[in-house]
Structure formats: structure tokens, C-alpha cells
Image (tube, rainbow, N blue to C red; front, side):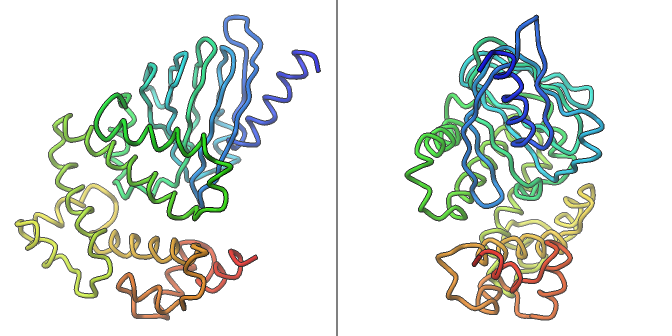
Length: 304
């Protein structure tokens, strides 16, 4: 296969893997590359390598192939620059950047690059839109602390993908998303975003108490030593109320359990009750509205 054919094959693979992403020449270099992937439920992990190039998600592609996903690119070698919505975020070796697949973007990759890439639903972090926007403004380091643990998890999962194929993708997915969320949250604290940090404390508490049927604004506020008014104010700029956020987190927990093969023998009502949901008609309506199918429909699809 000639180099031009290799470039065409790479462009096709890139477009298939990342919803129409297009590879282009940069500095006269023909774009070549390869990738390996692993799917963990609704999270994708990719080991991507190649030559100097620009990869672009155009405005037309963003309109025609809408995906409610966020993406991080962790640079292992070479270098990268993400440009999206008037932001220019350089990514050095050992750093990663967060960007949004609903919008057009351009990623310039320098040298013989290697990147670890992760795509995930924008709702997975449980972070409001203004906070996500702030997180997209700068790179995140992974040289120490929680960031180093997250990078190690991402690397190890990709390197061991064949051995992990028989494991539980849902549980591995949860570990990866939790470590990414912790990395982003830690960076938010050091940047002095006090409101975001306080809201993250609330969300952490909620996630740890979703099974409690008595979970309420009053109980959460009391546990975190704030007034219910302050609690509600923290969610005013997110586009969702505190109650709606809790309901969405519970629905997502139910969806994860229903997709977990290790829990296939557990009834839908038992799964829902595990996360504090006892109203089955409400569950069916809300689940279908959020995911486009009933809980039993998801079970049938997962079961093959």
C-alpha cells in the first residue's frame, strides 16, 4: 500500500472512530496514523499515533453528526494544540486538555506523536456547563497526585485491553470516570474556583448517598453545614435544579447497573431501589425520556 493510500485509510479510520473527524496535511507532511481502541460501556479509550497533522471537526460535521460527548487528549509524545470556540490550549507531554464534540474544533499534532484519548458522555462528570467551559480553557498536568493516578489508569487500561476484554466494562468505566472527575476537581480547587469546589462537595455527598430514600436538600445542607438556600443557589447557574440533578444521577446509576452483566439476575425494581427509586411508573417514564428506551428494553438490548 502506497503512502497516499495509507493516508486515505487513516482518514477513513479516524472519521469512523471519531464521528467524522478529518485528517489534513500540516507543514507539508502527509497525515498518517493508527489507533487501538477499547470500549467501556459508553466510554471510549484510544491509543492514537501518527505523523504531524491537523485533525478537524468541521461545522458541517458538528451539525450533521451530533454527539453528546466530551473528549480528552493526553499527550504521550510530540505535542498538540486544541482550538475551539476562540480558545487555544497547548498540550505538552504529560498534559491533557478537555474539549467538546458538539462543536467544531481543530487539533494540531506535532512531530511523531502518541496520544491517549478518552471520550465520555458530557453528563458523566455531573458538572454544570459553566464549570465545563472553565475547564476547557487550560491544560491539566498528570505528573503527580490524582492526575498521575488517572493517567496510569488510562495507560494501563489501553495496554491491557485484550486481557481486560472479559472483565466488567461498566466497573472499569466507573473507575476511569471517577479518576478523571477527581483530576478535574483538584485542578479547580487550585485555581480558586470556590463556588465550583463547593458544588463538587455537594455532588460528592449526593453520589455517596443516592441509595438513601430520605436524601433531600435539607439533609444534604445539614451534612455539609450550609443552609438549604445556599445549596440551591449553588445550582442556579447550571440550568438544572438540585432535585433534577439528583434524579439524573439516580437514573444514570440505574442505567449502569442494568448494563452490568454481573447484575443481570437482579430485578429492575431491586436495581432501582438500590438507588433510592421506588416509583416504578416514574422510573419507566423518566428512563425512556432520558435514554430513548425503557429499563426492560435496555436489559433486552444488553442481553443480546
